[in-house]
Amino acid sequence: MVGPPGAGKGTQAQILASELSIPKVSTGDIFRANVSGGTELGNQAKTYMDRGELVPDEVTNAMVRDRLAQDDAKAGFLLDGFPRNVAQAETLNKILGELDELLDVVLELRVDKEEVVKRLSGRRSCRNCGHVQHVDYDPPKTEGVCDSCGGELFQRDDDREETIRRRLEVYDEQTAPLVSFYDNEGLLVPIKATGPVEDVTARAMEALRSRT
Ligand code: AMP
Image (cartoon, rainbow, N blue to C red; front, side, top):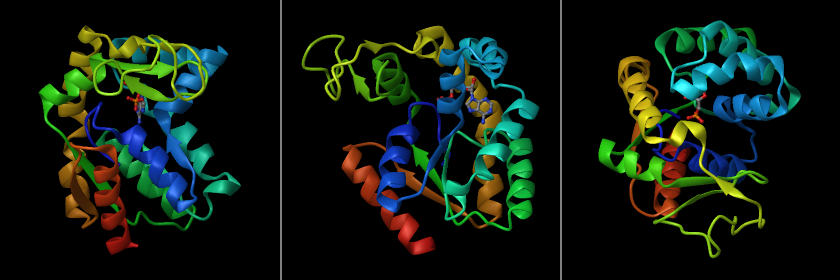
């Protein structure tokens, strides 16, 4: 899946992966788990993440290579947040070649910039189960408390306004070129990513059905 931060990649990836019974491989989630766990990888990633910059390719690519080689990814997987630049996309092609696999489809989630800033600045994530809510669009029943598990809702450090702006710049400079990269490979399917979550899921499922 490609699309700017706040396009709903994580939300859709979660739903689609569960519908398709394949693992969701989210590089952002793996980095965050490592930051919380205080691992060496987490320490390496944190400074970049806090600034809204990309973690260096060698770190990210090695992590993805390991993840895709695990048994649960043999029958398919859904990538969320990777690749994030053309060099990563080229490495992904190599990794897939080694595993004798191919990408079926690249879903591009389309949403405009202003909407993205509104979504990200109001986004709150659960510290316990990872469920995502929004202060205006999906307000928790009790302020600061996750509707799903009762855990504490918090704002990701990189969802603060200055970092959001930098993440959007990084998207335009480094990630947006993937749209034409995958279009040239004949894999790209653009999807309107605004409106109810279920509608976006239905569009995504339709695109997947037509390509797999
Ligand atoms: P995300 O949850 O996908 O928005 O990712 C959060 C942060 O993790 C990004 O702003 C980057 O700092 C880092 N990150 C996630 N995926 C990648 C990637 N493929 N390459 C480099 N950095 C990444």
